[in-house]
Every structure is written in C-alpha cells, then in structure tokens.
Amino acid sequence: MTTHALEALRSALRDRAEPDVRIRQMRVLRPPEGDELLGVRVPVVRELARTHRELAWEDVDALLRSPVHEERLAGVLVLAERMRTARGAQRRVLVDFYLARTRCVDNWDLVDGSAHVVLGPWLVDGPEDAPDVLDELAASSWLWDRRIAVVATLALIREGRYDTTLRLVRALCRDPEPLIHKALGWMLREIGRRDAPLLVAFLEHHLTDLPRITVRYATERLPAGERARFVRTR
Image 1 (cartoon, rainbow, N blue to C red):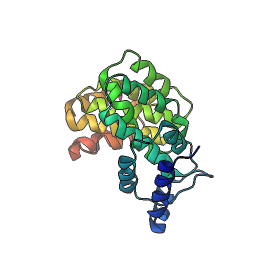
Image 2 (cartoon, one colour):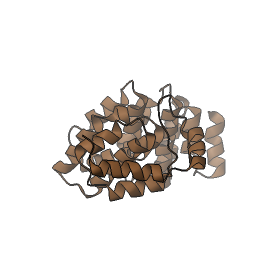
Image 3 (cartoon, rainbow, N blue to C red):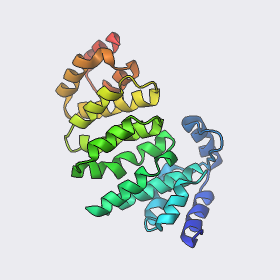
Image 4 (cartoon, rainbow, N blue to C red):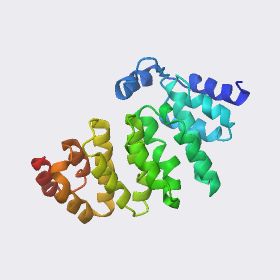
C-alpha cells in the first residue's frame, strides 16, 4: 500500500527533474534497459532523503525495488541517514535490511553513496561476523555485491584500520570487472593519503598482481616520480 509520505517523495523527485541533468547522467551512469532515469541532481536527492528519513520500512523497500533510478538512490540514502544516528542493535537492523536488498543496489553511484555509510559504521563496531559478511559479498557473482564489499571498508580506512581493505584487494585483484579494479584503486589511494609508506610497500610487494587501472588510481596522490615508477611497471 502506497503511503502519503512515499507519494510526496516521489512527486518531489519528479518536480526536481532536469532534462539536461538526465542527459549527462545517462552518459555517466549508463543505466541498463528498463532503468528509468529522471535527471535529479544527487544533492537534491540527498536533501530529500534527509527530510524523509522517517519513512516506513515498507516505503523504503518500495523505493529500493523501484524501476526509477533516483527512487532507489533515495532509498539507500534514507538508510544512510538513519545509520548516522543508529546505535547498537539498530545498526544491525539497518545492515540486515540493506544486505537483503543488494540486488536493488545496481549501479556504482548507488553503491558508492551507501556502502561505507550503511555497512561502514557497523564494520567499525567490529561485530564477529563482519569478515564473513564481507567475504560473502566479495565472492558474489553480483558485481555490485563485490563493489559494496570494497567500498564499505572506506569507513575502516577513515579509522586508520587498513588490514581488511588490503585483504580484499588481494582477494579481488583478479576480478574481471573494471569497476572492481577502480574501487580497489580508490581504496588504496585513500590508504595512501593517510599512510603513504604503507601504500608504497604494498604496491612494491603486490604490483604484478594488480590491474593497471588499480595502480593508476592508487598512485594518484604519490609524488610524480614515484607514481611514474609504479605505472610504468604496470
């Protein structure tokens, strides 16, 4: 049953659609057939998610299962907003809800806007089954599950905890998908921003195993000469 709050959010998204934005997003997101793109700017969707953070669970579920891209984005951003204030068992409820619906998180912007802020705080809490959850995602045949596993560790990186990310980089460095290669490089770059010697040591040890695009992303913030040394090798 559709609620008034859900219909209000859907109406607000359509009211804020911009044809020029839609054209740009079609080019950047390359949505699959059947994915409806309205052309709403991400900051607008984020603000609407913030003002609708108290949506009923069934409304959030309806958003995530929608064929409209911005509605799915609003759904994951509502979960992200709730996670900001959730504590303890509340976090587990949000994580379980998200994990049960990762098939709805089906483009890079949906993953990157949610994984580290929905799964991330829960990972930082250090639950015993966190490694198993990440390993299951990383072993999934669903591309976006694997990207979720990688991007979720950004929350750990920001806490100065790098081992989980480095383990996933080693596990996924042979992945066939460029979008995984890029995510690995992004996370390595984030580690390097905080601990450049650790990044350099990791690259020196694992360079021949890493995809070229991973190395290029990972070394973007290294000094030019050092970056060139790694990129030339790959």
